[in-house]
Image (tube, rainbow, N blue to C red; front, side, top):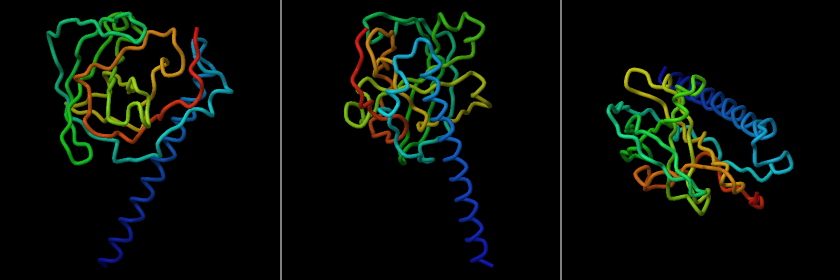
Length: 201
């Protein structure tokens, strides 16, 4: 009986891993396709082979405790081209990653939040110790929505971390991840360094 329980647990775990890998593969396929359909995209179809990703790793999909922040002042988040964008700190999240407690802030773009189609859009930029080595030196982003937060919790999937457009080309106003959103470890998940030639507009 004990062997049967272990066997069934193993089979269930493998099925879950396969389902997650399939889901992430579909997500990355759509991610690449969006470059072709977005009229503001810095990449063309011929550039897509220069996009690279870490292998799927479900240990980088974490459950986070969310503390919603109220009465936060508007601050100006610098962008890579020297401009600034107004944001507020929307929430503080706490989670475990690689066996260590971590903390990050989730932000909301003030201008976008006033547009109905983007009213629920949240922004999680971060830095980690893979930057300028395995990943883009300027950090990476994760997209969230207000509806992703339920009962004081949300799921953060670092496998879906992606590069800002500034990793591929200049001429874009990409927010720079604040230093307060630095993880002092390697996040070996999500998008890697772009290997194509950076474009100049």
